[in-house]
Every structure is written in C-alpha cells, then in structure tokens.
Amino acid sequence: MLKSKSKIIYHGDRQIPLLVEKGEDGFYVVECPVLKGCYTQGKTIDEALTNIREVIELILEEKENRIILKNYKPVEFSLHTITV
Image (cartoon, rainbow, N blue to C red; front, side):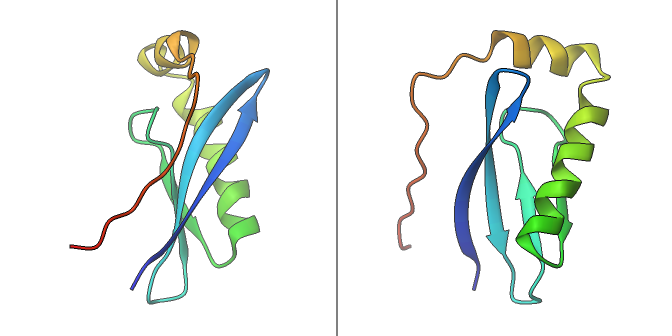
C-alpha cells in the first residue's frame, strides 16, 4: 500500500508541485510531474525532499527542462485519488 502526499517546493520564485509516496518498504519516493526524469527517494520525507532539490538542480541543467519550468504557470494544483 502506498500513502500519497502532495508537496510544493520553490525554485526561485516558482512553485513546483511534488508527489510524495511512502512505499511498503518504508522509503519515500518523490517525483515532480512537471519536469522530465525528476524523481528520487529517501528513508524519511526530509531526506527525500533534500534529494529532490538536488535532482531538480541537475534536471535544470537540461535546456528542455528549463523551458518547461519557464513556461509552467499553474493557477491551481490539486491531487485527487480514486479507488479502483
């Protein structure tokens, strides 16, 4: 069973949505649905969020991701779940 939480971090003055899931193994997996290839994990939420900040810095070295971030202007962000 995975537990999901939504977080938002800031890059400069930009808000970037993050999805945080706790897996059965106890690790937290964090991904940014806006940037390509942007995900990591950690033993704690704090460790996972520290790791994702490092990943974001690396990801933004790619021109394609800098353009995505530059053009990303959300009005609202929400996370919903359904049971299937």
